[in-house]
Amino acid sequence: MRGSGAVETLQSALPEPALSLLGVVTVLGDLPVLVGAACLALVGLDRERGAYVFAVILGGLALLAGLKATLALPRPDPTLHLIETASTGFPSGHALGTTVVYGTLALVIDRGGSRRRRLAVAGAVVALVSLSRVALGVHYPADVVVGVLLGIAYLLAADRLTGREPSSAFRLAAALAVCGFVLGTVTGPTPYAEVVAGIALDRDATATLGATVGGLAAWRAIERGSPGSTLVAVVLIAAGLVGYASDPHVVLRGLAAAAGTAGLVLAADRWHRSEGESGKW
Image (cartoon, rainbow, N blue to C red; front, side, top):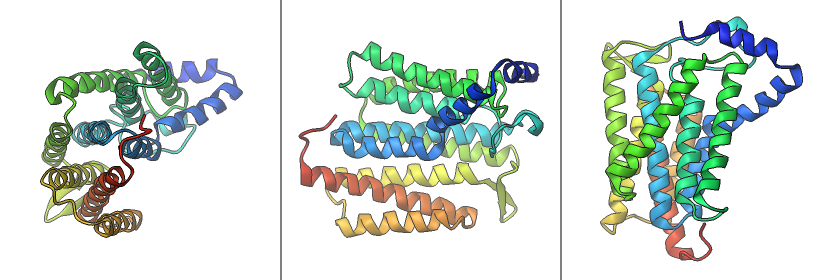
């Protein structure tokens, strides 16, 4: 119903070298790459713009996790998969994620040519990553089209609702995470949920809830003038990394995401205070 025939047609039309190349291109939309881009923006841009980009990306991930937990639609038949993948299929996380991350960077960074050129480059990356997901057999065409459209709609809404102000962007991200977490819980368990006290908690929705709340709490502490020491930031980051990497129970996973994200925001603030704003993108 979402276009399985198109997946088979595209795979048969592309030569093996092209499919191999798309297997490399698709990495640009992997979660570690997107999160890494958010972290680089947090320290590479000036304090306010970096925090804004970071918060917008968090919100995009929260929107994605909530939609996947709520809809829980399957991917194409596993026989079509040319790479390993996890989570549910709709909307495409790579399509939505790349739209949000590269689109935000193109809009906010003031280097690398005109805004039109930056948006064109971002659009090309999004298009190639989206194409790769269909060609590799892990998404239907509708998954990536809807993912891109949702990403664009979210970026426009975030720009209008927040005025590019970090605290508003963090609040929007947390609100989206709460809504996604609640809706995902109400609509029933996904294949990636764990039962806690009789309630099925989706792992990604829980993690993004923790991350957005942690980021919001840290930014509010910075605004109040009580961000804590560098040691506090390092301990929080370490706790988040260790906790998340150990693949703990879903609740601990959410707490680890909260600690790690809070630590990153606090550490970036300490960095900006010590280095100043010179040389930022």
